[in-house]
Length: 320
Image (cartoon, rainbow, N blue to C red; front, side, top):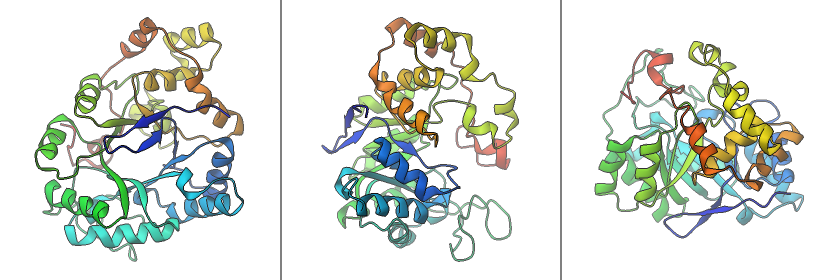
């Protein structure tokens, strides 16, 4: 089992640098989580929007019941969906999410996107996605400050140990830090060699935030969604620069891409179900890229963002 480094958060807590992402884990989710724990994973990154929290919780329970881990060994992560941004809706949905997971608290709880949408009752639509029951993307009037203060309250009442934000850019983060009573511990954003986000990472880290990268393999995560931008983009696994560096180190292209991220001080949350790949992803921290190799990979940057709402919704220009 690989020795996974820890990242210390600004509140003194620690998280493993390599975790397991639960986005698009739709088949035998409980078994996938259980096997990942057996393989050595201790951080699981979930969300209301993934629609699999109850199943993931079943995998956690089984692992605890079988004596593989204790609850305190795990870092369970979830996120507030956009339809629950009004302050009075935050605590109730978090309590519901905790009930689905079968746990008493989240180790990290994020605001998933910096956009508030009209409330949709989970009893009517789950996961509710971006559109209301009329099939329309309709924003609500909740401000980020209102929502953040409700998220801070989760820490006060013990429902979250650490809180953070996801899909925030520099100016929004700068504004939030002006009024935050409890500073975000983690920023989670899309980062891969085609979207290196060098300046954003530098800014967040300078403010004491840990940064978690999602979609570290770039277009790979989005090809199965049949998104044209991902299908038409050269795959990072096949890129000559990545292949050459992988061959030099005797590693896979996936391991090189993950190590590029972790050597930048980022946490990563790749998702695989194959036992061999589970082990390989954990072992990606067991070698070092040369500084020049890190620069070579970073130079592949195209500022190419795959998780961009206007591309699949036609509205919500969050990253404009």
